[in-house]
Image 1 (spheres, rainbow, N blue to C red):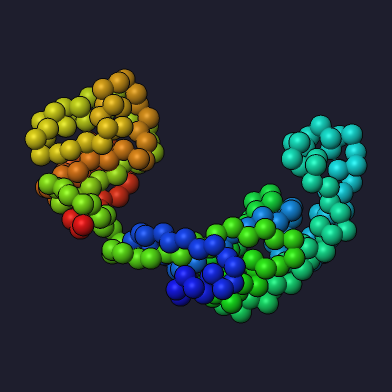
Image 2 (cartoon, rainbow, N blue to C red):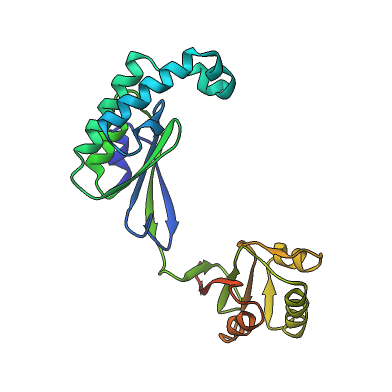
Amino acid sequence: MDSLYWINLNLKHNYKYTNKLFYGEYQYCASGELNYAKLLRGFDRETLEYRLKSYQSMNRSNFGYFIYSYDQRRRQITDETQKHLFNFLDIIENVKTNFKLVLGWHDFYFYTNDDNAIRNVLFADGVYAKPVVEVVVTHPIKTIIRKRSDYRYRCYLSNTIISQYQRDQLLKFFKNHNESTKLSKTFQAWLDKDYKYCRDYFFFDYNDSGLPLLLEMMAPRLIKETLEIIVQD
């Protein structure tokens, strides 16, 4: 689908260049704002009606005044709000292709491969449309694109807590492999301090495919994923 299509629909359109589709299945993410979108969870009309009555009652009560944020208090549930929610539910129920809908309090993310469904959802009454994001798969899964690199692989670590012994082993390991690995700045800074909680954005580049296995032997579940580095302008 070219950009002219989205321009003709008067919808902004962005590309996301990556190695996989949304949730491994969907090419498009259409998002927008819709007051009290979260009440749609479950996609059941009776449940929605019950929730609307409950929240209307809370809006009018003193108790509701204190437990709601300012944003919640200023968004009163009006007859128009209810009409918009039931109309949106009608649209979702009539989508005939596979999709995934993620709901926030007053926003939503609609993942699909059907551009007609996007048009119906984003032009629904009460919806403030945000730019449509289209995935462009530029390289295979388990790979990462770099403009230049002296290394063949990149290894990302997991969100996990390690023991003092494991930490000492990691320091020794990377000291011994100083010339054959390149650590991210955040990973290096973490190693230089006495922290035990590892974060999933720490990574290192390397050439020996056996290095992650050695790390796993020292600290099980430390490795999150390994990627092949593709050098490409």
